[in-house]
Length: 293
View (cartoon, helix red, strand yellow):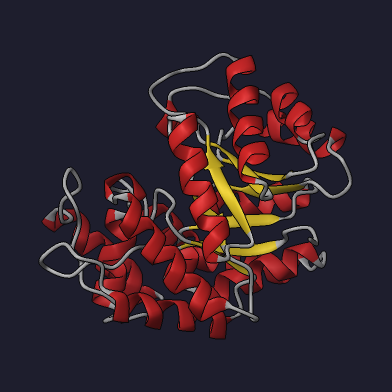
């Protein structure tokens, strides 16, 4: 498998009012993403509200994504949980469905040691026999795995990259400097994608590309080609939307924006709820400024 580069969209999961998966809207969203030029798709991450989906629902979302993307762009299915055994089961499911790789978030709540992180990820890939991108997001998991742990994991042939959302640029640069040649370093923060690429990173797994897949993936491609002037223009064009996407917990703002854009309905599963009135107006102004409404 070639190295993952460019933009991977961390897909939202559209729901109907009764809480079931809106399969039609999901298919339309995926087709729009592919047509708009993103390089790969990432269903069932935190942006996809995977924490509140059962095993059958996760598998159905992955199945739809694989069906729509097959032969066009790769699918990296989110299968990580805070249970190693449950993650193995979900990862085997994703492989059987036809995902090209999986995204494994660091175990949340458990707060493992660095050795625990290492053994968790290795156990999953060795039992499921599929390539994986590991995901460091201490803001959600309450525990950071270090550059040393990432570089140790990068020696494993099935661990092919990291989505880094620690916001510790020195840590990211340490990984970039010492990683194996074919190990991808992807930003987990849209607003830090440009600086990460200029430091030698390979791209992003993105929230904002749900809303502006063409512009954001173009920004990433310009940055990867060294055209920083055009990359900066697009970065700052989209900067306020990057910020607005996190004025409430992700994916509340991005799903609300997609609803305003007539792409999906703004339905959530508890404990997530619809966006507050004041923040909704702030988001609407940003979308209007970008001529997305």
